[in-house]
Image (cartoon, rainbow, N blue to C red; front, side, top):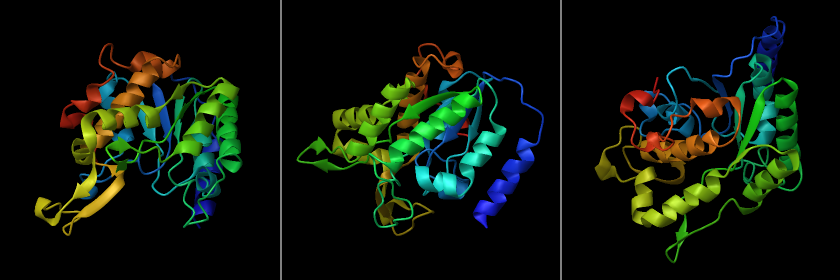
Amino acid sequence: MKIAAALALALVMGAAPAALADPNRIVIASDSTAADYSARSFPQMGWGMVLKCSLKPDAQIVNLARGGRSTKTFQEEGLWSVLMAQLKPDDTVLIQFGHNDADTKKIVRFTDPNGAYADNLRRFVADVRTAGAKPVLITPIAKLIFKDGQIQDTHGPYSATVRRVAAETRTPLIDLDKESQAALQKMGEAQGAKRFMIYSAADKIASHPEGINDTTHPNELGARMAAGIVAKGLKGAKVPASKLVLRGEADASARGEPTCAGRP
């Protein structure tokens, strides 16, 4: 049902006249770590929700990130077709996957980092360029997993593949994995925990009254940290959206006001 509905929407949108170029648009294809969330899910947030805190007011963000999606299921469920149907020339498309591609428990999501994962990334890049838009590849945000005081590289082969495909296809790369690992290592595990969905019952979080220990998904502070890294990388990516990043304020998301959050 999801596939049929998404494809039908894509066909309808694809029948429309060719869209005019819009260099102020940023389109996000990703998973839960970048997705939008309703107020009832707070404090869980994706970096796509707060990215505009680092951008000029005329920036437009189309956030198509969806929780639980890998490069495989994002296509199988028709989400990539929906994205392509509404893409305009000069759009900047931010592509970040990897968390769910590595999921061997839910095998429907899994992709081999040196096989289908790489092929899917290449397809995304090629499709975006065919539409006259500009792709940017992003490694997945680091998980909060420490051992003996050291942040662990949990996305190893997947991030390596993103870097390799970016180099092969001459696509701008934002190394969110590397940069977020460095940021978390610098602040330490205790401070890093304040940027993820890690709470006890005593914190009285409405969405998780019994507490939660989630080292994968960022809360508002974590989303702002990641968005700041993405904005900084976007500024130097030499794509249409680079000019949208506020000069000298690529890390504004980390200290932006709540009105930037974009919470529904």
